Image (cartoon, rainbow, N blue to C red; front, side):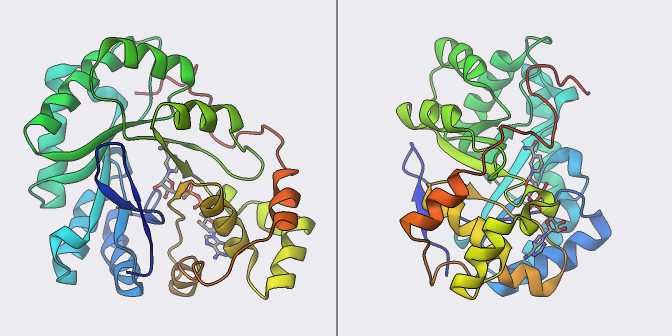
Length: 276
Ligand code: NAD
């Protein structure tokens, strides 16, 4: 594969760049994921709530790519938090994906007011012990939620998947994760394509390297150590987002992007998000 792996805290290797499928309808997912696999992506990020695990699974089956060369992530939706409901929801996801195991299973949101992420994670530990998930982790957890989880459970999450892009650089969370061996995965790495890709500093760096703004932003993520999962349904962009391993940003470029942080979220605040 074109994409170099990172090694998670349990020794499992994960491609540092993958393909995200949020907002891709199930009937389009087969084509979109198929295009991504053909372009060379080997890691796919879906979730039960995206409603496209079936289409994703069809593309995987049709690709003919050996299972051990793929890295499939899915996520437990909020309404299914709790020990038994998690085990049941996992079976449903696996069935829809048409797989025997997933590579990474994530708790989608912490829902701190509900108070069920610890028991949910204990079900994740069972799935991991049973060999049905190669690595377990979380998404949208603030350090305070991770602190609670680490105190009450034994498997350190392999990953925390959080909103992260040049306008929300998440310095404190990244340091917290690094100190505990938790990899940081960036969702909406391109800021959902809204505005970020027209920021003059990014456009200037793109011109300097004869690359696109999206490629510059993805390269910045890779160089600060993030796992990234850009989404596009446009074949040319799907390919473009993968062509980021044959150039690098220099210290000046990195500093210019580093200066764009505004601590500004696009998505919900994990401390209060409670949608089920
Ligand atoms: P993103 O930052 O990947 O942006 C995607 C959008 O950017 C596309 O729809 C398109 O409009 C534009 N774009 C993509 N490639 C481009 C290119 N080369 N040139 C110009 N424009 C381009 O946003 P996202 O989809 O929100 O995030 C990526 C993935 O992260 C999702 O698909 C999903 O898998 C995951 N995610 C997870 C959570 C979570 O709560 N865990 C939340 C949101 C997203």
